[in-house]
Image (tube, rainbow, N blue to C red; front, side, top):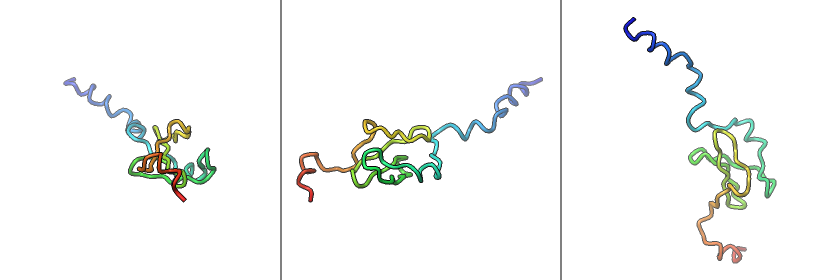
Length: 89
């Protein structure tokens, strides 16, 4: 045996590679997700791996393929400072 046994061990589990990295959420799952605040459907943004609520201007992160739907985790997508929010029509 010239280190061949060790070689075989590494590719023992081919299914493992898919689960690591940034996991994409199930498209069918995303279909049913609504914003907990506005109860409106969310748009999946593939570039940032987030669920966007255009109406409220917030984005929920998706961690390991699971959307983190708590308002505390949401980040604001609107660039303007909060002071200007009240002046919006």
